[in-house]
Amino acid sequence: MNSPYPIPEIPWTSRILLGGFEPRSTVNWPGRIVATIYLRGCPWRCAYCHNPHLQKRGCAPSLSWERIAAQLEAQRADLQGVVFSGGEPTAESTLPEAIAAVRAMGLPVGLQTSGAYPERLAAVLPLLDWVGFDLKTDYAGYDQLTGAPGSAARVTHSARVIIASGIPHEFRLTWHHEVLSEEAALLAAHFARHLGAQRFVLQLYRQEGVEITELAPDSVPSPALVEQIRALFADFELRSEICGLAD
Image (cartoon, rainbow, N blue to C red; front, side, top):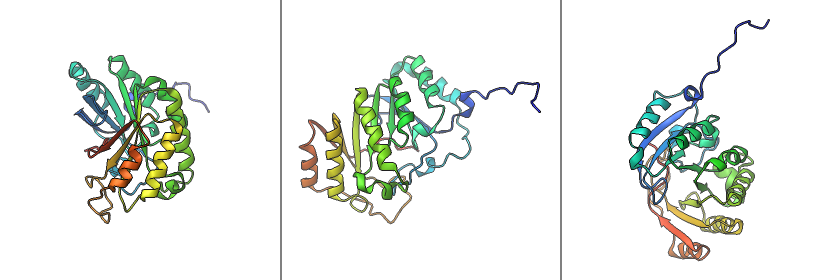
């Protein structure tokens, strides 16, 4: 029997699963001073994940959207944008509403994504000003590294969508010799170049936040690998800071 009383819809600001908030960062959108909003949920289980506490969606934390919005308004004059990260931010169904709310404040919006949900990524791309795209490995190694069958195909779709959009972006690959072979890293870089990526970053591994302690704490790519990848891109960076690291 249908109830005669309408069930009120819960507002998106109460449904969004927030994982953290960083009021100021100079690395999460390179070249800009930004605030970073971390969202919960990721379908992948990469060995060197720096935000494993954000992988599971679980219960919404005590941090509220209203509190974040108030802080963004208070420091709006000092910010050059807001970045959504995670976890995997496109796992959050309220992401479009959250992006729209930030844009309504007059702030540019960036997104850090692994490409796990290409259809959701395509839906929010028109609302974005920049994308940081996290490559993990070459096509053949994706499913094993992420623990998710079909992830390679999803990443390929997402990468093509980003390139086709014309939105400023960077493709980046985190290096650890126990997770990624030099051959796989070079194949991943060639893949990005083939698609037409304009900027590529080889990101050095940092142990901070990583739960798998069996991994060696330090890993530096060989000069030969760095130069081989550098030669593929007019805009290349070897980066020591990890982008999207949530407290």
